[in-house]
Length: 164
Figure 1 (tube, rainbow, N blue to C red):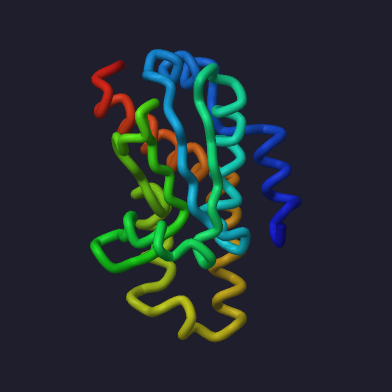
Figure 2 (tube, one colour):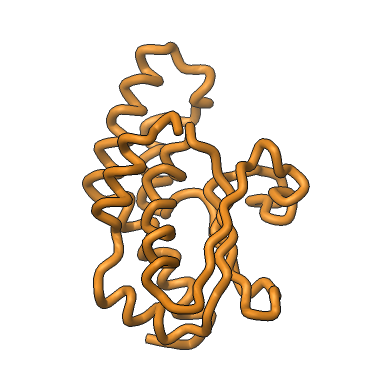
């Protein structure tokens, strides 16, 4: 748990609202498969909310798998057919049939990150610039990205299951 402090912060104060839980309760019981790694901000800022959701909705289950030791599983959820983008949240019905899945970060978080990188690979940046972008990204998660990520998954689920 490299980022346990942030994970625990989100676990204590998850992103969902009572209205979100009302919407999710109208869905069939779901089994949520989560794939991630503890070094990934997109994971440690979003996974705790799904932990709480699974605890609060009867019939929901959550199983978490580390990506790097489950590459065979990860290969079923490649983003743009080649990228092992995490987190992955896959939603299965009671008969273990995949219903829908989501990965990575919300559009608003992705735009922010893309603008900060300005076409460069994160790994190619000097350490001080990587640190600055990481710090600003953390602020963005606390300010809006956590909620934006969760809302994107909610919209996906609501559309898939035809609920409002």
